[in-house]
Length: 202
Length: 159
Image 1 (cartoon, rainbow over the protein chains, first blue to last red):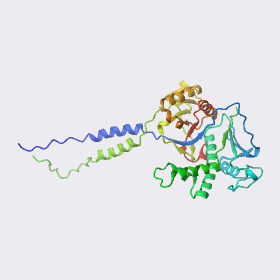
Image 2: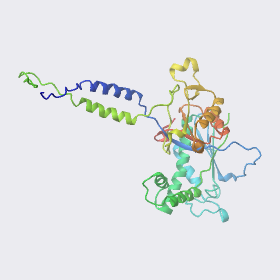
Image 3: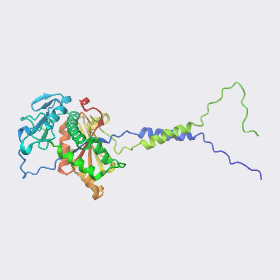
Image 4: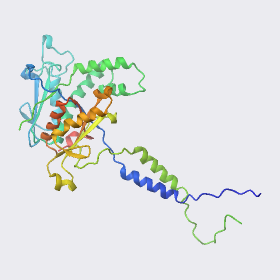
């Protein structure tokens, strides 16, 4: 019997099929955003617990009104200056004795915060404040903490706090992860994120 | 029988499209890999604000989404023009958040519950009053880990 080659399959329509699938995926694709500012809400208020008494100078009051204007420590401020103002407040280290802060590099003014551990940022917004302004304020305040933590991490461990957190998540990190975790904890204790949100005014 | 017939000279040779499927398949595979199927159909405007101090949410199955914003144009007549909350595929009231969170919790394995995060995808033009109400509801049901989903960019460009 004569040797007969198998008939070739016509592949001309393969492109059409592939195009069909391609268009389907093109249409269904949405670039999903899955990153954002992580926060932790305070637990529900227990009415029996007395709120702790804080010194006036240890509180940094940030208010946003319904026209999205910023009022920081009773002075109007642009959002671009908020980060620097928050850093100045947190890093002040004006305390003495038990409350002294040996790693602060601030002005040590007696009218600003005693110690980063004691300093609290209080954020109050109006019910009619825009969400995007609120996010911008949150972002700047978180950035102030991150910047100070970066500085301390650089001084103590020779790399930034952001890098340390990235290393902790990195599966290929060669160093000791347990130690890294403790180091991160230490930095967080130097500058604890104390951001309190007051009930919005009507 | 000759398989290849000599073309008449003078005619333009046709461009070979034999590699077209390969190119298309390449694109196809790219989009197949990059596609994330949207879980919810958005019924609201969702123009997220920008921020740069962001963390990535990596465990997708441990995130529940709460959307808020003004109803998009095709729902304006039925849902009004005021900012609304969207849970799953429906418009919802503030009071619906607690049952929603409990239902999400019930669907997850018990050991994963402490890692459950709530992602708030809120339109930038929404009033904080609504967001405050959502946060209050979340506090009531002890869903304390939240994430304000944002686009990555300079925060000062908001407003």
